[in-house]
Image (cartoon, rainbow, N blue to C red; front, side, top):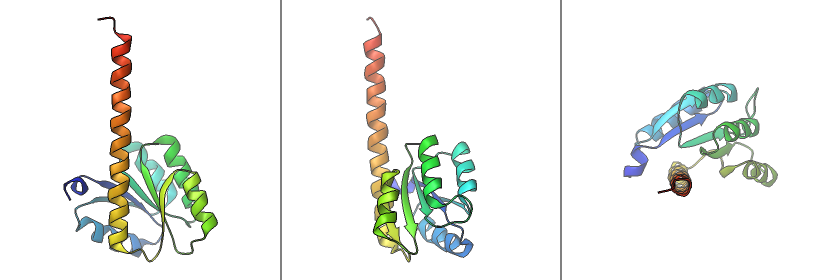
Length: 146
């Protein structure tokens, strides 16, 4: 659970009551949750803050979940994204994964399942960041003539 204590989650959904309840439930389990009620707000938040995982609703007015996913991945490819939907289809799941989502869950989401998906997403993000850092160090060492 120690790794979950530091996990910062961006929760994006236009249903205010849903994000309030889910935020509370995730925070009581040690996660740091920041909520956005639209894709537009989520994109602004990713400019200012660093998140490990974003949990994004598929169907939202304005910028929908897929567009939010695409734009977050363009700006911050290291943020892992889990999509949520109230009416999931195989096609929408495939589309989400094609654009960089790590997983796709249907509402109502089982909290234990979501916690496990967030844990796995954070783990994958940490491995990717470690690999990137190791490559950067390797490139620096190659470029030096010592």
